[in-house]
Image (cartoon, rainbow, N blue to C red):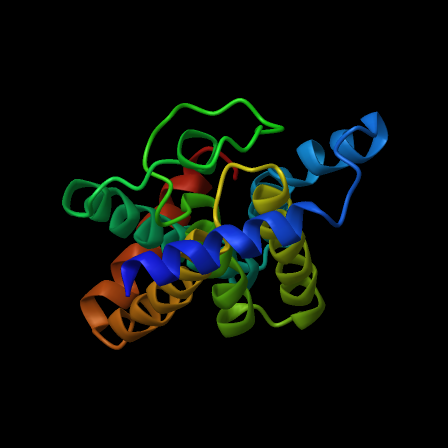
Length: 200
């Protein structure tokens, strides 16, 4: 069964990489750019929401920024713990002689940390943001990023799918934790109070 899954994952990887010309500098540059762009975009969203809340004296925007941050932090914490227990799956370049377009340390390929991060962030955006166009924006960027990481040859499609599923689950887990009053009050109130002391 595992051999079949690995074989299918490899075929999907090769098929996905075939959508671009790997000898085209422009296309390779685009893949490299979008393979990480969602990480920076999500940071800008969080900072933007917080600053908007500061300038307009609107606590709701700050709470939205914190919700995104906590959902993402929980997802990355789960990813960190999983890396201690899961067997190491070598990256495609080590098992299928796939030439990567992005330099990467030879660590565990499964699951994709970027996909966990993006899955959690996009899901949290739909759960907690009032302006849903922002959620659609980060979802599209996250999907493009995931595709580009497969095209770049540093992840199998299965790594991305598993990572995204974990990220989505992490966001819903964070939403579940919010039903507990002591968590719901402290994780929002204290950061906002401390930020006010430094005019943020």
